[in-house]
Length: 632
Image 1 (cartoon, one colour):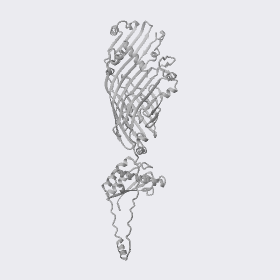
Image 2 (cartoon, one colour):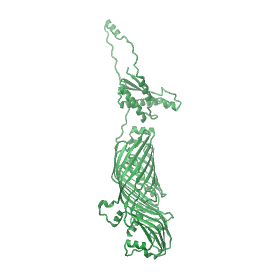
Image 3 (tube, helix red, strand yellow):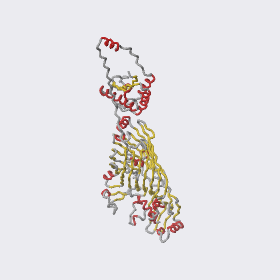
Image 4 (spheres, helix red, strand yellow):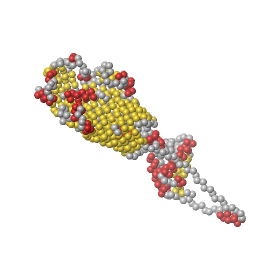
């Protein structure tokens, strides 16, 4: 019985030691690296890092609606010798009282990018979660009361009281990959398989419990049902019997899973800019909007329980309180006597099967301007009220942030299912990061009901910076004309005249009409970003085909003509059309076409194909034409 009482106290009070989610505000930073798998395994797909190693990270949260701690006391960081009234106070309202806690430690972990689309990670992680829910306010207000009239003669009722605690570790293998990508859209998926090691679990449940004590010697009413179960590891912990090495701490083994998906959208101009400047230096991924969803910690563990784990039906009415005294009897004798007297009935509990703290995550990340982002994150607890197992709270977090490779700052505003608001601040400086989702709100408040932190260190190795390719400017090749022969005599003059007598000019040889038509059609599929010489991705396929045609016909030369619509000045359009023609020439040369077979010219808006009166007409005039010919 002492063990049961001790465990109940640990479960109730331990739940108030340390929010539900971990690393709030830092989860979806594009430079987080391997830590991102804790929220969504797809986060590592297409990572900006070639390698990322997490050295150590920790996150903790405490929350309760039962007590308020004075801010002046909390920020002194001296937690011993606290007294009610001086350092903290009870919340006296009719609401049921709850406690919740979460400690999350991400141990040595590593992520490796296989290539630009696919990444894998190996992670280690430890977590402790504890929750108490639905403690009656009437019962709560009696805690610590010593005056007889505070207890006797009061009819107390407790329904649906639940306390759960769970400590476990896991070793995870994660894969994240890009499933689909084009110039506007990207779809990423990810999954984590985890080997879960249960370190201990306990559960206490009471329902329809009615208590009324006439005085110290008589029980008017004590009825209801209660159950308590805890794993053998907790029993060893209470006894201090942990001599079996590391294995003594492992009570259960099982598997768990995380599944995630990420969709990214970007504008054509933003994507082209990222490709041009190198995505790791302007913006980590180039997206304007990212939408993510994941389900984490799918699974449950099975623990063996100690013999004292059981469900009890209580029926004490009009009896002396001495019946509850253990006296010199053993626990088994005590329970058997109560059963024989009809005061309790007992049914054993053979196993404890708590669910892992399953969460459904939904996240929207918007690139507001360059490196400034706004993130909305939602988490929904999927462990039902009737299921056994400690769980996270459901909540929302709105986080504006500025991020770069070596410095980030973020400020989350949070709200959870307990109607609790928080406002925090966090930084990432070099390889270190530290933050809290409640520090600013707690500075503003006079009394504190919750607090959290996260801190960590990881060592990233980024990808090489992309090198911007410059267009090749083709200068005309000067070939000097041969000097005419010198004339000294009349005979020589006649020979010269004969020598320079014009010959008939042959008809020019034309390129095969089939090839000409194909290149003309392909040129109509070459697109640029409006007002720019940045090629869109869909232009690569037709340009690759044109390169193949030129390489297969080495006697054919190409003249690339750049054209623009009438928007803007002539000088601007002339320069733009020349840059576009040069860009096409550079691309074809990169595909293996000889430099001397390509020439460029620009006509600006001077040779429109259609009237510049409509958007459709202007679109037809923003074009590149490729003329094929044999060298004259």
